Amino acid sequence: MKKIIWAGLSVLLMPCGLQAQDIETHVTVHAGETALETLLTEEQKQSVTHLTVTGTLREEDYAFLRNKLYPLLDTLNLRAADIDSLPDISSEVLREPNYNKIHLILPMSIEHIGTNFLSQFSSYYSLEVTGKFPTFGECTDSPQPSNRTKVALSDDNFSYETILYKRPNWMTESYYSSIYSSDGGIFYYMNMDADGEYAIKEGTRIIHETAFRNLSLPTFTLILPESLDSIGDYAFERTQCPVSTGYYDIGAEIVCYATEPPKLGQDVFKRSVLEQSLLYVPQVSIEKYKNTEGWNQAPEIRTIETHGDLPPSRISTQTCESKVSITPMTDYYELNFSQKPLYIETYSTSGMLLTKQTTTSSFLYIERKRLASPYTIVRVYFANQATETVKLIP
Image (cartoon, rainbow, N blue to C red; front, top):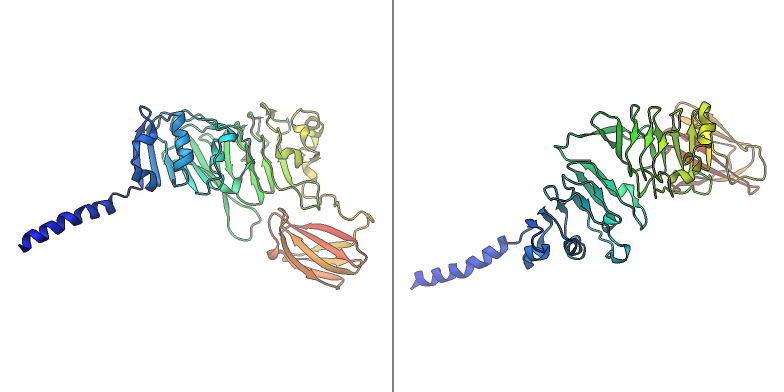
């Protein structure tokens, strides 16, 4: 009798154990012949975090992903899918922002990512390029913050090369990465995630079309090499960066060493950071840039020889005489004031207040190691209600 009872209990317990094991987080489907929604069980629709798709995707499949699965997915693997273009997404049908970070493994056959497609991942996303490097469609929404995106090559993608660069003038060791063609002649993408100086390496001849398109960039100095010959269609279209804190008219810098203005494709600088940046070029070429369509969208074009000079202050208009003299030392700056100060504020280049302190002394020491890169904005308030702003480099 006991044997029958135990056998019965074991039969009852087995389905419960199977249900616990059947919660699937990793699912692979072959789509195209039937709707993606029908290929997943109801349980999988609630539990999947890593979805691998082979075959192809229909229009309704993308809607299903957008409306049901994107909030759940950590990874969407389309590597083996027969897809050469990810579709345009109408701004009217974009769902509420998906704040789940997603890793999108692109198809090996990809050529183009459609308008607004990446806007579906409005918090954080990373792209893994397995085959050809794609072009990016327009974003009709706000540009995507570049510190929330990451583009990388798959381990077996040898058509391109990732190069790591150490950030100059940083107090702690820090790096950024850029993607180039295997021969180094074409620049494709740069992962920009913090204020500072970035460079496209010497020897680069072409900036690939849509390389920076749709990105909200940090406050930066972007250095373009002497070897640069051309910039592809829409490369900087709809880029933006933080506008100045109110101290300067200009929020970013582009330094181009090419003596001949690089040839521009279609709408390269349309609604771009160039419209709010200082452009520095070789002295012998300044008139060429000023008279070249596209490049002359910069509000001010200066010679490279003057790069690093303090921009004109917008604040102190009472007198042209400086009230702050700066003596640079090895480890610190000495600031001397010709008038009585009240207090001093320091800001990062993105406008963040770093410090505020009162002082009535006629001089002040600021240690270089306490300064933010690429430079710190120092604003001095005087007793006569005048102000003066200076820039200190670490």
